[in-house]
Amino acid sequence: MTDRDRFSTATRLRLLGEQTAARVYRSQTRRQARRSRLTGRAALLALVVCSMVVALAYPMRQYFSQRAEIADMQQQKRQAQQRVRQLRDLKARWQDDAYAQQQIRRRLHYVLPGETGYIVIDPGTAEQSRADLTTARRPWYANVWEGVDKSDASAQ
Image 1 (cartoon, rainbow, N blue to C red):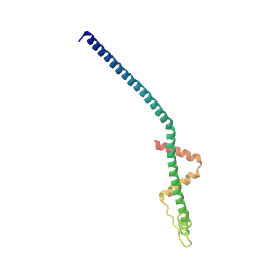
Image 2 (cartoon, one colour; image 1 turned 90 degrees about the vertical axis):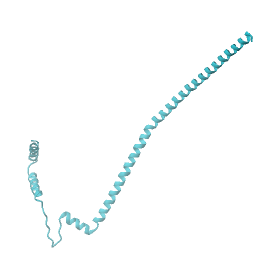
Image 3 (cartoon, helix red, strand yellow; image 1 turned 180 degrees about the horizontal axis):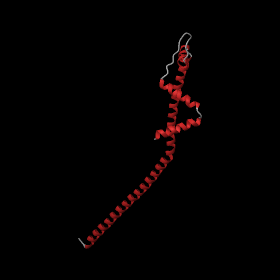
Image 4 (cartoon, rainbow, N blue to C red; image 1 turned 45 degrees about the horizontal axis):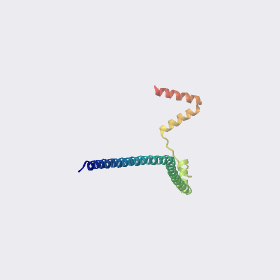
């Protein structure tokens, strides 16, 4: 082998190494360029998603509050319907003469001709009603002053 062949092989290897290094460098540069583009795309996508979330947050909150309000209104409607049914039942009972007579006798202490009515009064209640009558006969400022005296006595 001559020096020239060796030189040419060494030159070829050197050129081959430089070409390979250049390819590797270009490949890495492309990957980095792709990565940077992908990162930019990801940032843009994240920005769009965040914008959508922010844009939809208020309408969704309104939707859920309106759904809760509708549920409350339906509950009130059911309660009102139940109250109407109760009042209709009560009206139907009052239209019955026997029920009306029973209630009149019980509430107003009515007695039929020939009957004797009795009212039993609790002694504690009678004393209280006498005290209420006494309080009603005095001027209002005397009642106020007595209330002040009672609260002062209970505080001590």
